[in-house]
Length: 135
Image (cartoon, rainbow, N blue to C red; front, side):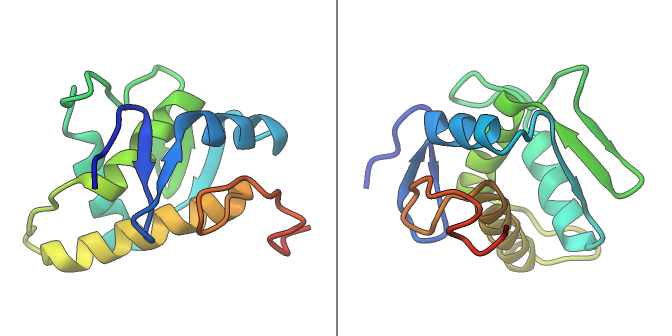
């Protein structure tokens, strides 16, 4: 499998194009995309994804409008695309509290949940929130 620039590998190992995510963000009025994170494993995954800085795609999760504090995340559309991609392709590391495998599981679960909230199915297609049973 070849991973292409501006594609996100989902939990089914299918490619989701950034344009699909950006369309879903626009259609669901999710700019910025906000979420509340209560799981320490998910925070560990987010931290490792963000702390990469600039990656091989010359992209970073850094925008003055991104907020990661007190259990709340507010992420701009492009940063969300980068974060989703990194959740699928990061080689997570063990921490003092969590194993790399547990962090990977949390990252793929969170990525899948974000896709669902945006109305993107497991095949990487935007079908809308109503079709996902969310409205």
